[in-house]
Image (cartoon, rainbow, N blue to C red; front, side, top):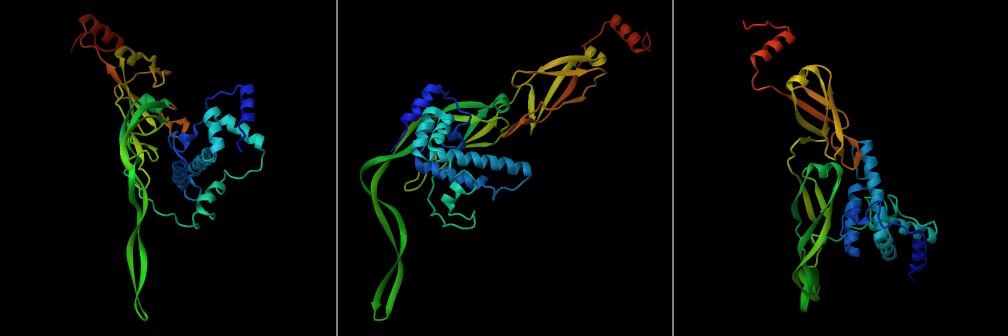
Length: 355
């Protein structure tokens, strides 16, 4: 029996916001309309990728993967449960949390065992029954143009997906065909074994085009060429699962900054006077804040100033940032009058007359 009404009363009294700290559908890389099987397969793929037994690298990378694995488990626990998913869709993460509090503590799940063992039969990755191979449609790769500002601060890009989907059609069809080992007796004490194709009978289907909006989340620090994957949003496959849809990040050139990994490069031109006597000036950054550039001595053409912590954020660790490297050019005057030449020689200690 579903018990949503008592929770609704609690939510109304507390006036909970619908804005979520994290989007469980994004965590699992599935669309909001994904069905149970799509969510299960997406979870399996991500669990295999981020399970602690499979992750190698530095301690920091392992810790980040463990956090991601916990988020994946938490998202799956909610979206794989019909009642919890309905609550989440209506009231968000806080609604699910209050519902769990009403149900009481003591339920398992959420760790590297728990839900993962449900799929793989326990024992980590060494045991369990091998899953039947399911044919899969082709992946679709689409270039996603983004700005450097998008990759610095993060962005949501809404696009429309036009895809082929299977819909019911009149009649029946042969499906799930496979080779089956058959045996027949040829005579006394003589048998013959052979393989024969056997098929089931399934309702017929046909292809139609379907348009739907997709929100692509560009996270701070993503690199050029990074793939943002929507599981099973690619080309369909009869009696199989659809391929994946991958948006490939393509960074548009920027007027001021060039990216080099986690660092940013910029070329700044200063007037000759500032190059000689020093200067303080500001440089507008990608999110609108100003970076202070200063020099107290002489600045030469090609001098490079490093500004720590003003580079690009690290992907999935946005609090960590690279550095900004500013290369200076000097804006020399096109020409000087004779009076200006004489003044320059006097100020710089040169001869008052040309040699």
